[in-house]
Image 1 (cartoon, rainbow, N blue to C red):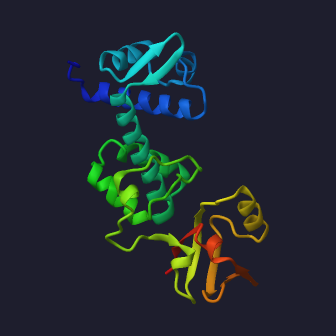
Image 2: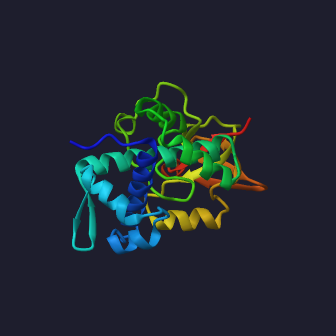
Length: 223
């Protein structure tokens, strides 16, 4: 049975789990890379705590999560990246404030509140930096109890001004084509028409678009 940890130890453990998750995302999930990348005052002691609590396994230089460690790390990364989206897209905070506040929030959000934030944002697939947000139960159900702040362009009513938040391309060529038209995250557009085809205005340019592509563009309404 794992020893009950102090709040300081739990914070160190959480930060270590997040770092391991990020390293593994980048294909660098090794003990050597952890030692180099960790800001912990004693990387060796925190690895020891992770092993004692049954959160990781070591095989030579490779670090792997146990099921328990994976779920804890996944929850931390999910809360952090959703918080980044919330502070960046909704409150439009500076990047430095987004990072600091997201670090605080990830430790206090309950699973229920996390799912509510995710639903409110429209189940975003990535953080503002393009890193994937782990899926939750609310994403699997995709049941929306409130109108999401973030919605697909295809769901917007004609005459509405919106800002592009992110794009979920089905093909890499879609991103290149949209980018060439000036349709990129952060750009403000107006939806002019939905039928028989999507027509939108980007600054002074009017563009016709396939509804399938419009479904890949997620936007935030501009008041």
